[in-house]
Length: 300
Image 1 (cartoon, rainbow, N blue to C red):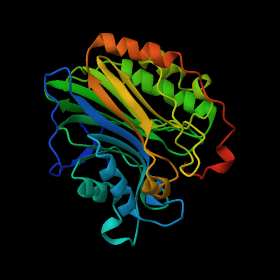
Image 2 (image 1 turned 30 degrees about the vertical axis):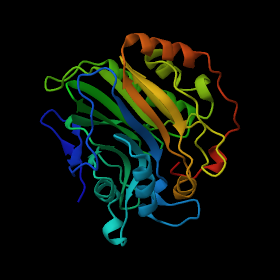
Image 3 (image 1 turned 90 degrees about the horizontal axis):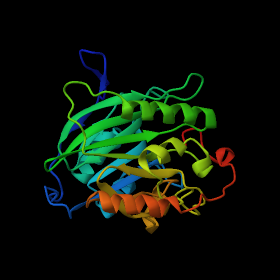
């Protein structure tokens, strides 16, 4: 049974399931290695054909073959056999460690975020992003060991309302700027990924991320059959710069969820390249979009 964990200070921790990796990671002390990352709202493994099929999500993740995957709308269901616990199933199917935060209970089950990774986990905690009067939301804040470096990975899923998202973004920024607990190492870089539900582009809640982390690529990921909205984002801060950020558009990905995966390569190639990437992305304009809220399900 999945459950939340609290340490002696009352801080939410994440639980991990460890499996052997499908392939070894190569990142060490060299500057020219990269890490493949993806953020993916899996829509509780219900595809656009309304069929529940965790195997399709697992197949998409294996196609992408990421070293770090941040997933949203992961679920535990009753009466679906070995696929009921999607955290455990997707970890087993991909051969990755699974990091899960304090879970959100919905209709008697569990619903929330996950991080799948091939890298060792140093520590993790849950950040509560729930705003009173709205659906429960949260983030996983995990420290991964990549060779001799520490990468802080935050996986999150924001709410549907503008005011809700502003509060959630400010809470995450406060967590990033806050003092570390004694058992945590200072991170060499930060990676923030998730479904931010910000259809208004940089005029919305993600402005605080743009100021603190640098602008992200605004790639359209929703809806998967005809993507018009850039709801899913990847941010990086520090000497690790994002390269080749793009939407994964395989036929199976278009079917398996109502979001398409957003994929990128995190490259440890120094501060100069990091600054150039920021400058390049800052010149990209926000894309216009209609309000998607009427078209989205309650769990979007």
